[in-house]
Image 1 (cartoon, each protein chain N blue to C red):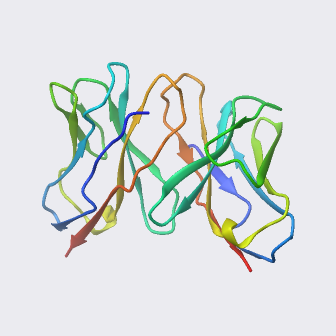
Image 2 (tube, rainbow over the protein chains, first blue to last red; image 1 turned 45 degrees about the vertical axis):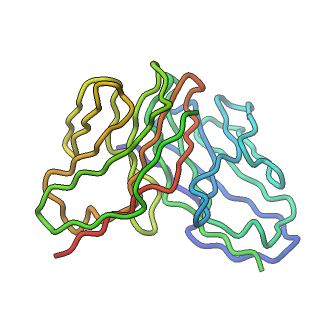
Length: 113
Length: 110
């Protein structure tokens, strides 16, 4: 079975802190994604990556950056956390054959105080 | 991506079939219809997908209208573990990016 793991299930940070969220997949997938999920807004795409060292902005990239140094790992970085970044963060991966199923991690619930 | 419309919530009794509808009247000819579900405190999980023909797998069945403007996810015998939010999503030529709407919260009563 495909496994997507995220470094933390719950995280509490203070405003202004730099926050790293890590995601690892074990299926050799080229594509990886970061979403945030908020009540009433569904899932929104932050960034995605189609290959190592490649990244593309999603719908809401402001305040975030990403890093993909290895194929299996995709990191989301909050350079200076703010309270409006309190959310559930979900990582996903898929193969590159277009319209393919995405496999999601369990999510990280981030609280910024 | 084309938009989908689903009821906010539905209720079912355990061991009864459940039909979850989805309208997607602006679907284009090359859009695939995907269904995901999200159990409490978990990430979304793939359920099923199709293009034109009805599809079956071990989790569910997908019935697609002839004009493709609507589809129905069918759980043949709902269990308490099927209580989740079910999302109907269209994936088109833009590729793998998924846009999730509000979904349908399915409640299963024992």
